[in-house]
Amino acid sequence: MAKFYLTTAIDYSNGEPHLGHALEKIGADCIARYRRLAGDDVHFLMGMDEHSQSVIQAAARGGVTPREWVDRMAETFADYWARLHCSHDDWIRTTEPRHVRGVTALLERIRQCRPDDLFEADYEGLYCTGCEEFKQGAQIVNGRCIEHPTLELVPTKERNHFFRLSAYGPRLLELIGSGALRVEPAIRRNEVVRLVEAGLQDVSISRQRLPWGIPFPGDSDQTVYVWFDALINYLSATGFPDAGYERLWPADLHVIGKGITRFHCVVWPAMLLAAGLELPRLVWAHGYVQWEGAKMSKTAGTAVSLDAAIERYGADALRYFLLREVGFTNDGDFTWERFDARYESDLANTLGNLVKRSLDMIHSYRGGIVPRGAWAAPLEDAAHTAVAAYRRAMDAYRLEEGAAQWMDLAARANRYIQETLPWELKKAGRDAELDNVLASLARTVVRLAVLAEPFVPATAETVLRLFGPATPPGPIRLAAVTDPDVAGRPIAKPPILFPKLRLAPA
Ligand SMILES: [Zn+2]
Figure: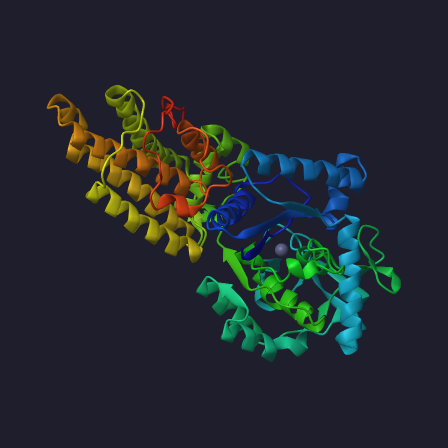
């Protein structure tokens, strides 16, 4: 079994999770579930970034200690990810001892391997507390951070430890150019290449007398800069520096948002090179969830709460909508109208309707036992074509396309019912033909449930359970979709998977 270690960005502990966080976690979860279906030995990491300065402020506002605050936030985030069926194998918090050890060990390793890469100097610059980063050049528009136009940049001057990032430009360009370090999609890779080509500056990696953070090894007056600290979570979660961490490292995939490519495709690889460690194989930078082409904003009344989005139709429907319509490549729009339209046309009218009609007919015409039927060419051939296209898309992380292929197969099966008119076959006593149609529909429903698993896991489980316990028992695999063996299987009465609700406009 091939190892597949994937991670998401870890989230700041300063506010509630929103739709943007959810898109990232759901997309990564979809990939994790797909790789498991494909037979990989998946290790999926998520977690919390708990050392930011904004934690101190948020805790003070909330009248609690930073520790109490981050504990509370970790619980809130974990609850949301559970509600959204995230299947992570590990959950790391940067305040955990295992992470503190990993950070300390990595810094010590850089100091051993490349002693000149760490040095002390004075730093003076404009600091964005939203990004937890010094800003310069094109990152500043109208005197503000482009990611945080509502925050004032803070002029900051202090003596810090630095990392000699400037030494790594040529090597990074070579690695990205050769594909040894893949950055996708291509638009993000091009941005990263332009950034590196413009020249890299050394980066400050410590803060003076910040009480909330990991002590800088060998300098008790300083703490490790929160971004430098946070990036190392991917490594410390593998057990680094203890023997055996190579079972997971290097990461096969870092899933991040497009706003943090500089850290993940430039700073992080350079840190690993300095320590003589292997680089992640692929960084995938997804786009943002928007409202009619613009950033969601509370003041403009276009911020959609994650809670309301889950409540509308349940977690599976939100997962499907975000991955199918918003997508995992570019920015995409969330509106209630589009959400309702996708829910009704795809989930209720196409998938839900197919499962209900197909299995209801097996109950009406064959006593709830899937008949033995021959290969019904039009539908079986369509299924094989769709499965192949689905796999190609999912292997290339084109989740929108994978979802489209899956849903197209459900639409094809609905048309097949209209073409074959099983109720007419029943009336005419054409039993063998009816058996073939019903058997093929049953196989297609099973296939669709397997293909659905990365997108709508709870629905997939509900449908598969209608066919009784899995034979053989164990995790479901994509191989099962080639020719699902359901002939002679008694099936349960199908529920309405996606009830149509008439909701008041939000
Ligand atoms: Zn910012």
